[in-house]
Image (tube, rainbow, N blue to C red; front, side, top):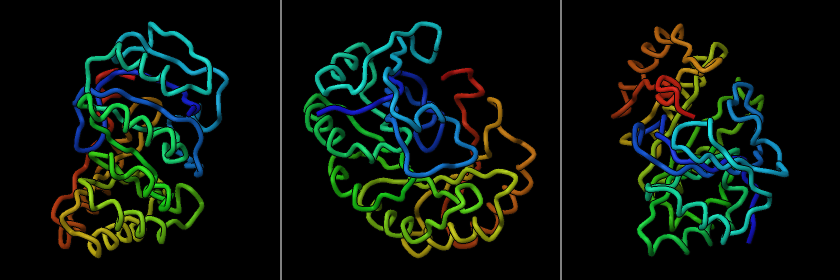
Length: 243
């Protein structure tokens, strides 16, 4: 069993409900979407080599590994890290469900936990590995960001994801429209209004676009009329200077 990865590292989680926690990041290659604000464009293709960062949170010390990577080699890399939380990210990790399922089976007995960071569109792929996932971070990809209408897939995906602890995240930029974010709120309300929604201002050149805060505050106020928990959170690791 092998998969293509662009990066393997240990760092601080900068997004979502586990922000600030130390985690291992497995950045899988390939994605079925093309978001115009994507901050991991190197992960859109299958690279001949991936990068293994030796120092937590830093890109100053690194080694390269050959792709595709086997489960056995992956487990050797993981021995270098102290964290027992693994973030499955990308790209889109659910393009590699067979690899992920086997990795989970191998590592769960040793106490590892898994956060799935996904674009929430590959509904059937989720079935293959959801049993071993401990937390799901599902992005809503707005039509203004992708050029595509993913509302039906997002609805079906979230309906399956709620059997596990989960939250949803929306990256907002200067093209995001009020009616799009309200559509996110409506889907969450129909499935479970207790689900946390995180409104994340887009990161540009390593800095959150704080000019979006007035708009985000307006949308947060509107959403809280029907949802329990809506938070405005930028990418924390960019403030800390971590990768």
